[in-house]
Length: 296
Image (cartoon, rainbow, N blue to C red):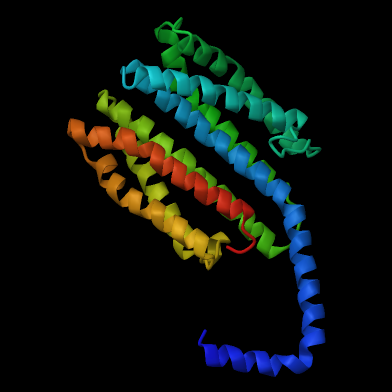
C-alpha cells in the first residue's frame, strides 16, 4: 500500500477510532476463540495424517534394508519411526499431553483406533524382527504386502477425526481440510519412493501405482497453491505458506521427472534417495504452518 494512501486511510479512520478499537477487540476475541477450539483437532489431524506417512516411510526403509541401500542408517531410522507410530497410536487411545492429543469420546473414532491397533500389532512385530536383524524373508514380505492395508486403515482414522468436527464454521472446516491434504502429501513422498524401489526390483505391477501416486502429489500441490472452492480449499494469501509451497514446488520439479522415468541412471537414483527426505521435510514444514498460522 502506498504511504500517501495509507496515511489518508488513517486520517479517515480517526473519528471512528473508539468504535474500530472495540470492533478489532471483538474480532480478535473471535479469532482467538476459533483458534483455541480448532487447534486441538488440527493437531490431531496432523498427527493422524503423519501416521499415514509413517506406514510408507517404514515400508520404504524396509525396502532399502532389503536392497542394502544405506542399511545401517535405514535400520536406525526404521526403529525410530516404528516407535513413533506406536507411541502416537497409543496416544490416540489414551491421550498424551506432550503430543497435544486429548482423549476422544467419539464412538466412530474409537472404533477406528481399535481397527488400526489390530492391523498394527503383527506389522510392528515384523518390523522389530527386521530391526533386530532376526527377520526371515517372511517379515520383509509381510511388511511389503500389508503396508497399504495399514495405510488404508490409518487414512480412515484421519477421515473420522476430520468428520468429528461439529462446527459449522466454514473457515475451520477449510483449514482442517488443508491440514489433511498437506499431511497426505507427506505420505505420498514416501509411497512413491517405495513404489519406485519396487519397480527397480522388477515388480512391474507397481509401475501404474507409481504414476498414480506421482499424479496425486502433483495435483494436490497445485490444489494447495491455487485453491479450489469445490474441494473446500482457498488460494493461500499467507506469505509464509506461499513461500513454503514454492520451496516444495522447486524440489518437486527436479524429482518428478526422475520418478516417472522408466530407467534411471545410478546417479539419478542417488538423487531420489538423497532428496526424498528433503521433500518430506519441507512438506512437513508446510503442514505445521497450515496447523499453526491463523491465516491461510
